[in-house]
Length: 113
Length: 112
Image 1 (spheres, one colour):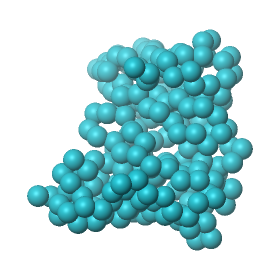
Image 2: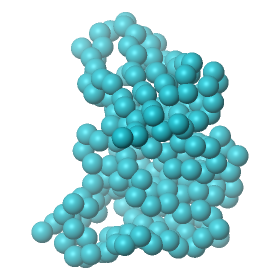
Image 3: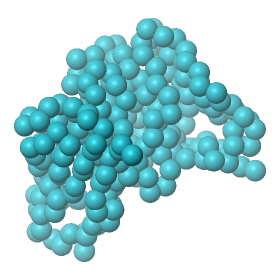
Image 4: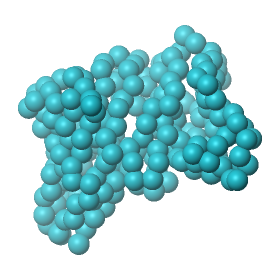
């Protein structure tokens, strides 16, 4: 089955700096890659997603890049703010896999003032 | 507002007792999912259902059971066979075909 690895597990940045979280996946049949933000005691919220026919997608301060050849994708947050502090999860979905997502183990992002 | 409602937010179980976690969605989504979240392990899939009256085991289904009698409801029962049930349980729903999953705010289950 699909395996998703996520790095780093913790990330601390200064307010205004950029943050990058990286994920790799194992199944070349994966074609959908969402990113979720989870705040303490809450469920994950989708922040951006990308499909395999696109190499990059941007939404204001958030961008995701996908390299299908290398089987990795990354989340980029620019101009970080304290409210960006949360746990971020990447995930991958295999085509024809019953809409199942395989999640990475999460990155705890802390934005310091 | 459309969304997913999980209840209760906190649940306590005695040894040997079955408990049922509720998940209701009004997004008109076909598919629903249950995940278990433990510290440092991300989300692991317990069961999922792509259509009413049908469901499949996920990666960690042992000790759990589900039903899908209505499109909007997908309750999860944690049975006494689940030896380590203490965790944060998340329910999600989506439309089929590479569509985003929307999550509820979870139920935290603890053993007394």
